[in-house]
Image (tube, rainbow, N blue to C red; front, side, top):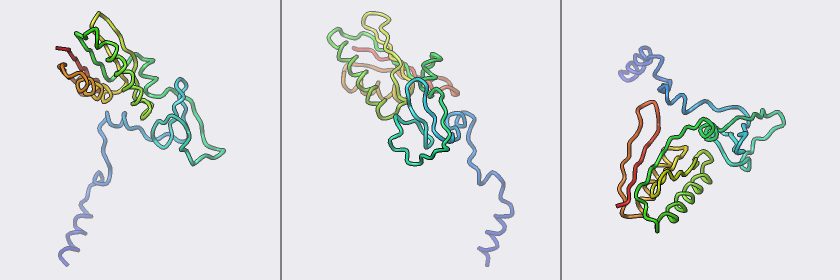
Length: 178
């Protein structure tokens, strides 16, 4: 009888927010509500359905004739258009013999990441000076994983990782060959 009384007492005094998931402002922006229908990217052809971006419609099973279709820019294409990024890696003191191998490693790693997720993209590789590469990506996690892979392959390298202030997700990584 005591247990029953406690449950009833708890249910009477329970607050309204007990049943809701409260997201911070940043999380609300990053995790939007799913769009109805199918959304195509105007630039790259990526497709948004089932609350995520995909390369194609091969796995989409709920096709109907009255399904709404719209065309917008995917988040990655929008970032590229607005000159925004979430990951930047600067590699210094690159030996001439490792320069081409490093470039192939970066391009291959980012291409495999793109095949897994159409929003993981290599925006550009710049060569501002001799022996220096600047790599810009659309995702901060992609930049961090790429830096880890570079450090794993080329053993004699140091890295320094810094993150931007709280509302932003940008990661800055500086690497230097010894």
